[in-house]
Length: 362
Image (tube, rainbow, N blue to C red; front, side, top):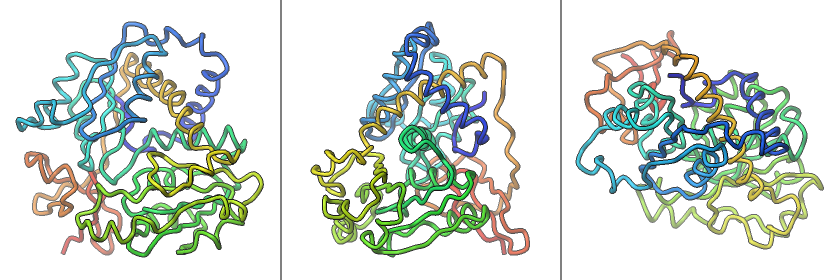
């Protein structure tokens, strides 16, 4: 079945159609109240989540469907050693669609190759988070009325921030979007996103460590949490965790119509005093997530009923190459064939199809 693993799995036209459907849901909720009657969503959350899991649950319930699943890997057969591949195949017997969050990068892709029902990536490690991106796009569109001709600042953890990676990939397909990357050097955006997403698409971008200097030019400020769970070294986390704090004084530097977004949860990177500012859109963003996930669930179930399949990846398989990323799903599911896509033939550079880690073939 066709699934959503990465935001680029959908064309710009398909994304725009989802946003239009979500806007119609906002305007006419009763029209969709039985759209998924008799259908079941399985929420497979192998790491903690509040907003995303509850958002998917609320979305399916408001469509008239039912929800089953779990919110901790410790409550599943994964604690006994069951693979993601087997879990997805088993859950296909009980549900019509899966939403999966997993700490290992590429796990939802493995599930999608195994399951006989659609799989939605609800976040895989520090890799990507396409449904949060849909919520981000819907919020920008509803608040500012456009997805083109924008200057968007990303602030905080840009290295491990899967929401950042996904949103940049989405915005790269819209016209005249400038990106401002605001982070400590240790948490800078991965080079593959800069070079293979932004530069490949001709995006204008700058890198800086100063939030204050960037504020006046931004149409959107996307704040992110410094994620303790992504750090192997606690001391490094302690050193970087308070790198940026958005407060009332900094908001005075911004445009009158600037929009502040945050994928949540926040810790202390946005002062609660900012919540009263009409430009603070992060709780409206959380609500928009429900609407766009409703639209997505309907789309994938409709395509499943029509028999639409995931496209076969254009891959190059090298038995002698193995992914070295310890956060990749291939590090725990040893039976998975290590598969790579070629991104630079002349330099022998390949990228793991699961986590996008770079590999050079000598």
